[in-house]
Image (cartoon, rainbow, N blue to C red):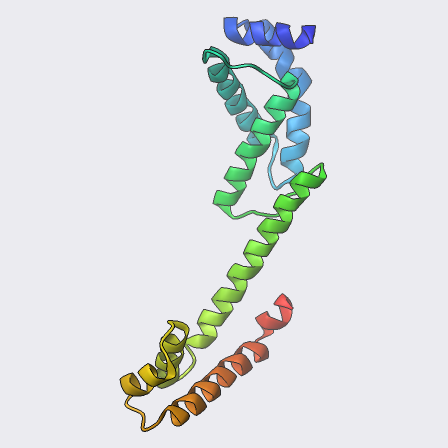
Length: 185
């Protein structure tokens, strides 16, 4: 902990010699993490610098108490900053070190998969006839069969159900025939 106290003192006072020492000691681990996750050494240096600025600002706040080691705190800041940057750049494949962080990867993968499925759905939906699109939009929008029958000016609810079924089957068929669907399943 004495090392952490020296680090905090150096950061508060701006001791450039000791801060250089901090870079030499902590930056390699940050670089390793960033490099494993679609980054490079320059990215790692930027993230590390940003983390030091954030920690410096936190240390100035009254009542701020560091409850972990300095390295753990800096690593957590760097990891969060890098994840945000990845998310913005859409390079979402990330490798982590522990179980809690692995669940983030699963969530991101799930989000990407759902987004891909939705894009495929929208692409194939646009291939339907205008009539089918309108029926399904109304149906998925929560309208009853009776309301759809009236809006579409169909003769009976039974006919509306039949048309909706055929349109839905056509959409499913279009989606399942697409090569992208095969990749997603």
